[in-house]
Image (cartoon, rainbow, N blue to C red; front, side, top):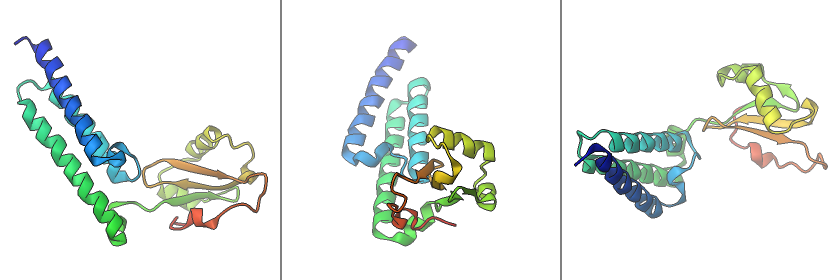
Length: 166
């Protein structure tokens, strides 16, 4: 069989399997809710790419790799829900890098973020005035959350910063 036909058939097979496994696993399959989820998503992309282009390895081996990744992700997701200690083991703690308009330089360094990175994220979040920024949090996934003061400065729930390292 010509290589291009093999690539097309492998792509159809592996993408169909990926869709099936995603439907069985549920919404979390490709989430970025934790660093672990992100790592699994990247691994799945790598397996798909290798499965489509590595014609010397049978496609079923890549299918088994997909299945193994989904099983591991499912087990870890369930353990994280059942035992908070397990969540602490698998996830980084979110870290406050700015509060009440003040940059927390020590945390910024610990997070490996420069002031230029921070200002870029503030611009992305449409922050117009540093004094109106309630908090900036480096999330366990590597995302940056910017919390602004609203029209009513008192309408902020401290619960949003629960578990965030200060």
